[in-house]
Image (cartoon, rainbow, N blue to C red):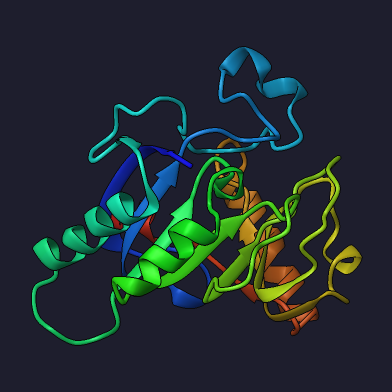
Length: 213
């Protein structure tokens, strides 16, 4: 299988349980819930998506013929940019919807390069064995099939209420204020919900606050 990526870059994870951790981000093209075109946004389940995942014109973007080829590029990105040794090399597959492309070949190739694998997915496609950290972000009007993992991150507010997914088998539960118009009000609402429902923790998009990718 070949792989198509919008961009590859080295930065700090800005969200969730690994916030602040150095990581190589591999943004895969395509999504099964939205075309990525603005004219289709209003009818998409994830109409609040804030990511450009169309094309291969981002930094490091392109097409990769094999899992081994892509894994080698990801590992080289870590080796080129890391300031000093220490910590396990970490790659985060995101999108779009990375589960349209992430498969056993790529997972095995990343592990062969000693890369720890994180995944950010909408949970509509089952995750194969071998992914080290699974973060699921449920979207409205879609069927959630990946109901276990390490981290459930719910954009708030939206059509899915937190209590509808609070029973699922995840280690961490995060509310992330919806970006865009009304962000301050969304942040206050998320704070208040976390205060009254301690199962949930607040996740901020710290990379946006810091002005980093």
